[in-house]
Image (cartoon, rainbow, N blue to C red; front, side, top):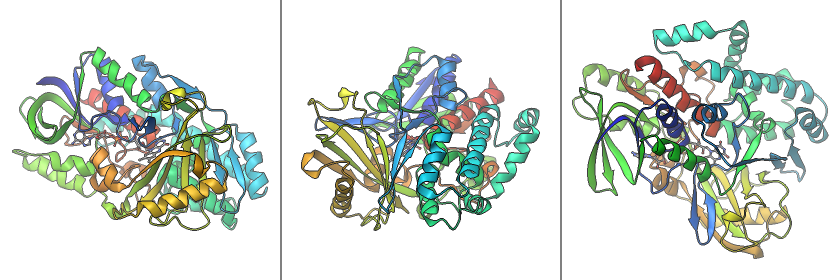
Length: 494
Ligand SMILES: Cc1cc2nc3c(=O)[nH]c(=O)nc-3n(C[C@H](O)[C@H](O)[C@H](O)COP(=O)(O)OP(=O)(O)OC[C@H]3O[C@@H](n4cnc5c(N)ncnc54)[C@H](O)[C@@H]3O)c2cc1C
């Protein structure tokens, strides 16, 4: 089958690139190994409930943010509801703190719980950095520069302010805490570390100030809920691409990328058996670099071999990555839900995973499409599994989670109608991602933003996006990575 572009995977990074290319009139084939699109941003029906596959929180719909920019360029519409209260954090000492979106309200709340010292200047600084990062991200789509045209594009758009802020890539969030004399406030340091873990996948000593400040201010931007689950963020993208002559091929797993005279042949297996070749001028891989590199097959030129070996050095192994332990719960609420998202810090590490916190999300109380029976609701609980350990005793972790939710009066065990848990092995099956790692490459202080994986894959017509490439953290990051892959492909060839 012949297309202009073959996109591997239908995660939000891949779909963003595919939608932008479709809007420019290119015929796009999307190969998705799963029976549903979306990858870690998706939802599935089980036992009468619609469960989120992975992501539950959504930012990026504010003006000047990547997702909003893709929606504006394509005209794709999403049925999303803004949240009044983005998140509550339940600290291990029993205190609860509300992460208000309004900066002043949030600072007042942070001062109430963590004390007045240093909070205002810390958060005002972080917010300023985060605004800078968001504004710059859409202007600098040639970043990280890996070609002469990228360098020129970056140089044409660079401002003294950007150079000033770039210096913060050399400093960690731990350094920032010291700068504001907050490093001895252990309650605050624990709070910062657990908040960083869900947005930057690592702790304060490893996360640079640019990413750290932006991650910590995640709740100071518009947070949204998508009715019916995040699959309804994905579906309008797929519909848009198909309306423009593209097609998604579900249950088609890409098994080889073979460079050809016209571009590439991407070989796919349908349901693990039937082989089909997809030919195209361009390829965009929307799957992790760990999974992408082994796909290059055929008569690979010495140049390409050298380039692939260089890329291999940027690949992280399981020891540096996280997977997730997740529980989907269908239940009868015993009180009205006033806040959808809760980060819950634990007094004791969670059995089996060793996590110091868990993340709980409810469906929106006005969204009645998430359960077959009236009056029932859905909760998703997730936590990190460092180093993607596969051997987990689900039951022990489940019990500890349910007990903690009951202690906080968030959910009553006797009201649980259905519950299931998934481990890294389930993630590996759902997404095919190596070791079942999810959430993207964690931030490490020795890797500066300009050293992160670029969208250009083979130096020819193959590109990559998703959460192992720049900037690749969560939905906002992967959407931006998709935009960058699109912009680079367009500048290079179209
Ligand atoms: C438990 C959990 C909670 C999260 N919470 C949030 C959150 O609240 N907010 C947020 O913004 N982010 C969150 N994230 C992160 C976010 O979901 C991901 O970073 C993002 O969705 C990844 O997108 P991606 O484009 O990298 O592709 P992925 O989501 O990894 O999708 C890749 C797709 O490619 C398919 N695929 C793989 N190999 C092949 C192949 N060979 N051939 C064909 N198809 C293939 C997979 O099936 C998959 O559908 C969470 C992640 C997890 C796991």
